[in-house]
Length: 329
Image 1 (cartoon, rainbow, N blue to C red):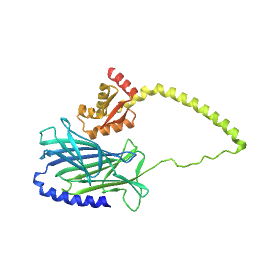
Image 2: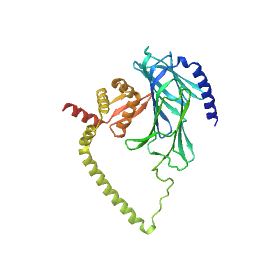
Image 3: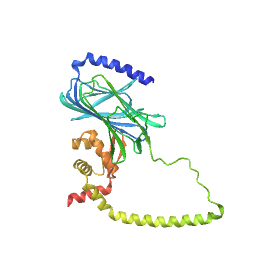
Image 4: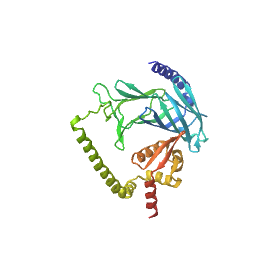
């Protein structure tokens, strides 16, 4: 409750200062936000701001949350930034590398905390953003954790505001997509989603002890089934191993052009490369590369591990071998 009151008060002050300086405000063509929620409630943000005209010497991005691992970049590379912690959240302040004022694009990435909390028997994601510059298009796309589903309830909607497009990524993770045309200047928009984890196994199950006179037979049957299962597993492994090459080739046959471009770049760099290197080499936005990484990771083509302020991408060895064979044929 205290946070909400503080947020409202800051919004009024923010709106007042905004309209005092409205004549000097920068103009934004597109403001795209991608929020990926992990199982621990940490939200990884990828933000892309495309300015029609940039009228400030520094680029400030306000986040109503505690953040970490913040970085930003433009067409010339990473920006020099500082993160200022405020009572209502955090502000990222960066100096542009480019002197370009028209059609300038900047990308932010950061991890946000305390945006997911328990609400009754479910989880609630809540994110607020204040429109400080005249904007033509604001888009927020959130991805719920693996195994999470929107809360099913008759007395309230599982998400707010209404009008979000509901989808799935690779048929597994639920996504919500809000698009606001010409958002109101100075207004603070709040986006919420109630979700719960489904399909979890029951906890604290106590195994039932077998009856004494049948104990020996149960052990013999268990050992027998175990031996049979072992032979089946070995047979399955040998058969599957022979089909791996064909399976990988079938995966490559359905890769999109953008995905194939990313995979080829990783092969050129060897077994590992940084995700930000892919962004620079492909000229894709951070948000787009992040989506491609997610799809390729869920299909077993690559894996990612967090290293400092970026991700290290590791290509599956079988995928790398078969891709080289495809390009040499």
